[in-house]
Image 1 (tube, one colour):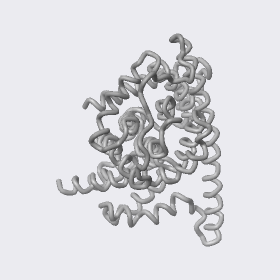
Image 2: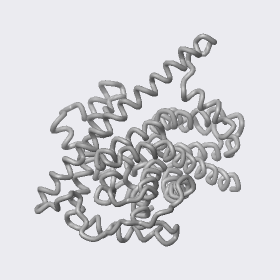
Image 3: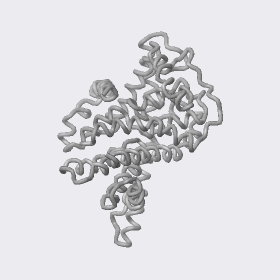
Image 4: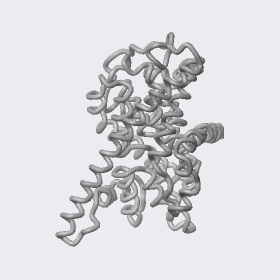
Length: 363
C-alpha cells in the first residue's frame, strides 16, 4: 500500500537521527545496548530526544526551501471541505499518519500564535489519537497485523477531529494564513542558518518534553505506589492504576465486541495503554499474537485498534512540554486542554476499535 511505503520511508528518514546521536553518545545508541541489557537498551534520552532535534531541524529546512508550504496547501485541502475544518487542522491531521505528537509542535510553529483555541485543540487531539509511521513499523514487528495498524491510523484522522469538535465546538473563524511562511521569527538567510535555527528550536522542544514527561511518569509511579500500599492492607499488594483500569474497562471492552472471557484482558491492555503508554500495552499483547491464535480474530482486531494511539497520561506531559516550548505565552491554555484532549483521543481510538470489531464480526 502507498501509506505503508510512505510510513517505511518516514521511518528510514528518522533513523538517520541515530547517526547524530551516535556521534555524541557513542555506543549508548547502538544495537549493543539491546544485547547488553537483554532487549531493554532503548534509552529515551538518547533515542527519542535527539530524533526530535533532528526532525525539527529537517522541518525548518523544508520550510526554508518551500516544501512545507506546498504540502500544507495540498494536504490541507484534503479534509478541509469534506469535514468543514480549517486548512491548518486538515494538514496537521493528515501528517499524523507519518509523524507523531513529538513532531507536530515543530510543524505548527509558524502558526501557533495565530491558531485559535479550537485549532490548537484539534492539533493536540490529532497527535494523541494517532501513532507515528515509525512506531507503526515497530509495532508490526511485535506481531500486530500491519493492516490493522494502517487502518487505525487512517481512521484516527476523522476520529480525532470528530471528538475534538464534540468536546470543543468551533466558535471562531480561522486567522491562519499561508503566505510568507517561515519557521523562525526572522527568516533565515541561508540553508545552514535554517538548519541551525531548527535544531535550537528542537532542543527547546526536547528539553520541554523530557522535563514534563519525567515529572508525569514519576507522579504516576507515586500514585501506583499509594494504590499498591493501600491495596496491600486488603491483600491486593499488586494493585495499580492499570489493574484498576483493567477491571473498570472490562465491561466497556465487552460492549465494544470482545467476548466476556477475554474482556478482562482487553480492559487490562487498554488500561495499560491509558496509564502508561501504547508501547507497554502492545508489548503485553504481543505474546497473545505469537501463541497460535488463542484469541478470536475479532478480539485481536478490537485490541489492536484500541491501542493504536498516543492517548495516555504521559502524553499530556509531552504535549504541554513540547507546545509550551515553542509558545510559552500559550502554556496555561495548552495545560488546560490536556485532559480534554486525552479524553477525545481515547474516545477516537475506542470508536475505531468498535467499528473494526463490528465489520470483522460480519465477515
